Image 1 (cartoon, rainbow, N blue to C red):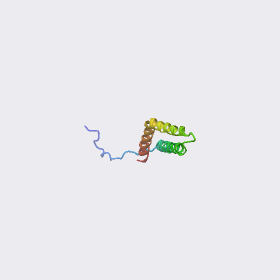
Image 2 (cartoon, rainbow, N blue to C red):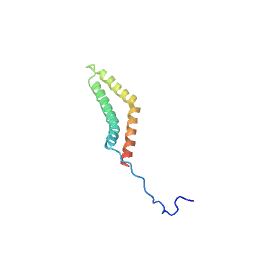
Image 3 (cartoon, rainbow, N blue to C red):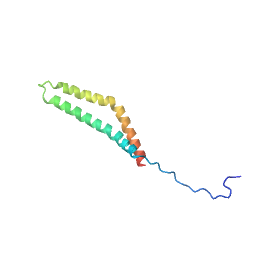
Image 4 (cartoon, rainbow, N blue to C red):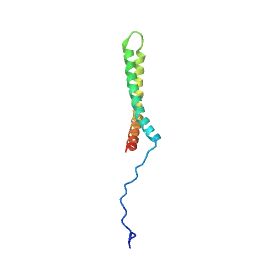
Length: 98
C-alpha cells in the first residue's frame, strides 16, 4: 500500500532562497574591482612612462620606456590571475544577486 493513504497530497513549496552574508558580497566586489583597478593602473602607468621617456631623448630617460615595457610584461604575465579573480567575482556577485 502507498504511504499517502488517507493523507492529502503535499503542496508544492518553492525552495528556500539562499541568503549570502555581507562579507560574501563584499568579497565579491573586491574580487571584481581589484583586477580592473590593477589593469587600468598598469596600462595608464605604462603609457605615462612611455610618454616621459619619449618627451626628451637627450636627458637619458630611455630607461623609463623599458620600465614601461616591464610594467606591461608583468600585466601580461599576471593576466591569468587577474582574469581568474574577475571571473570569481562575477560568479559570486551573480549568486548574491539571484
